[in-house]
Image (cartoon, rainbow, N blue to C red; front, side, top):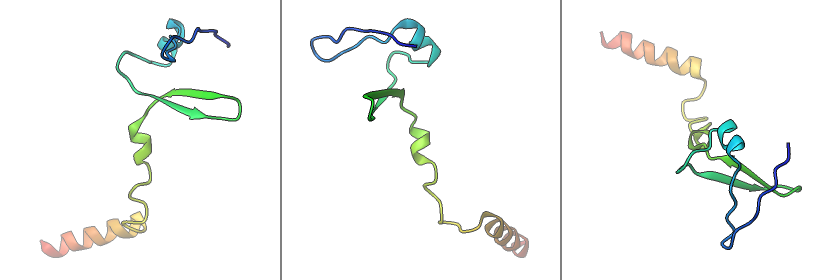
Length: 77
């Protein structure tokens, strides 16, 4: 699907209503702009996606960590 929009004085563009509805783009949300070989890619910003993997390696193997936590809990009781 291709849409054509006009660039305003300050570089603003209006995203057509059907695309805003399709991609849940509402007033006040933040749009992320990525530069690609073909041009610019606009997409709704998802701050949760940036946190993915942030704790990787902190707790080590999750199964071993859970077993250790359970053993510590059982020993306290």
